[in-house]
Image (cartoon, rainbow, N blue to C red; front, side, top):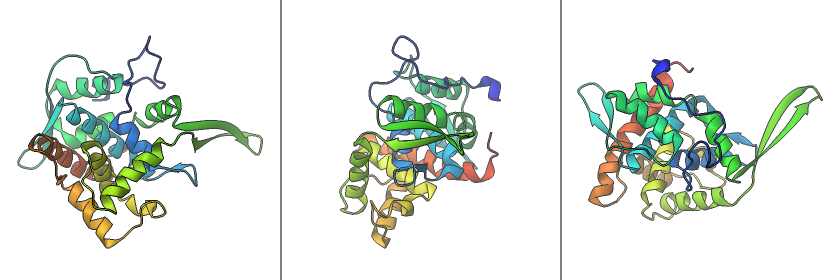
Amino acid sequence: MANDIPQPDAEPQRPDGERISPEPLLVEDTLLLLFQPDSGTIAGENILFSVLGGALLGDLALAGRAEAEQRRLSVSVHATGEGPLPDALLDAAWAFVSQKPRDVQTVLAAIGPALRGPVLDRLVERGDLSRHESRTFGIFPSTKLALASDRRAGLIARVRSALVDGETPDARTAACIALLSASGTLPQFHSEIPWSGDVYARSKTIERGDWGASAASSAVARTMNAIIANAVIAATVLPRT
């Protein structure tokens, strides 16, 4: 199966090479949110491939280029629309999905494992994170990540407004919340988003696809809900590659 998957390059190129959307993708927002500034680590590393895969499928859903269909025992993802997408990562994922409808867990296992490096590179490239190379004990190479912009703070503020203040999130913020909730990482944000029973309840409501959005967005929400609900299942039952 792996030979059928268009793989993104290790490093996003400039506009004269690989096409990169001028605006950050949902998968970029999700990884930036998961970055923990105090420790320089990423929350939920153990299931990161499925969370990022779910986020990239979410990008396709938000672009109207992928839909999920509930079948008897599984959820199937199929491609919609035609023509190139504005980003190479989206093109690679859509090309795989467009080959034939596939179980969402199969899609996540196919597209998710290759995303961490390229998405981190993009966050560094966009100036949201900085990367510092060093050597531990003067011998072992190590990499330290740090915040380099205030974009993560803006994302956190929107998530906090929805979960703590009860404001209706926009579609992208709702998708991020649903992914964080499904991954079980939200309690790790307690210093920025105070954890409580109300926060838990609101996050689970959004995770189930109730975004309080328009009818058109609700269709996207249903697709996102099907993708996200299966993302965590994929993390626990499918082997990592």
